Image (tube, rainbow, N blue to C red; front, side, top):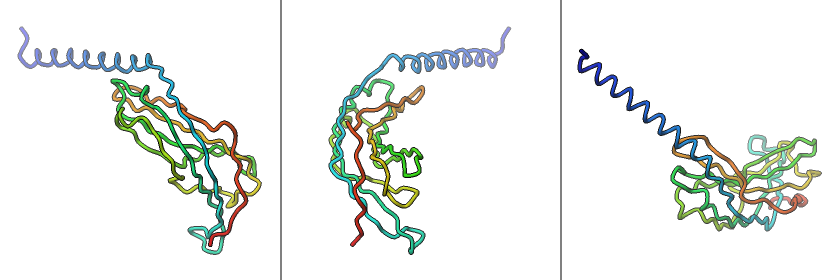
Length: 177
């Protein structure tokens, strides 16, 4: 007949196959949830300041400080397969040479459904600089609030919760005091 070792091997192979089928069903069922979160994004002010570059003390570089207000209800994104959300504010603009840029200026991780209603007013968390060292002659930028849903099992999904209604122009550069 069969030895104890072969019976344990057969049983564990069957159980691992069942577990993989269950995980695949969970991952596929996540696509059934198509939630559209609602949000509002307003840019209250932008200030462009000229300062010394970090690595080159004799070179000037413009830095933009964006003040914004976010109100978003992300609770529809949370269901039984959602581990956490990665939420970020992105600035999309084309520089003076016409190269399209997408820059993350603020982010937050939301781990619980209770914390998924976002009401935040603040400024950019990360430095907002252009590679050309100046925001002069740069067309207006669009700002959008985007998210990544990180599930327990399955693929990451992304989406957009809010966007500014019209592009916001960069003001003239101010010298740092």
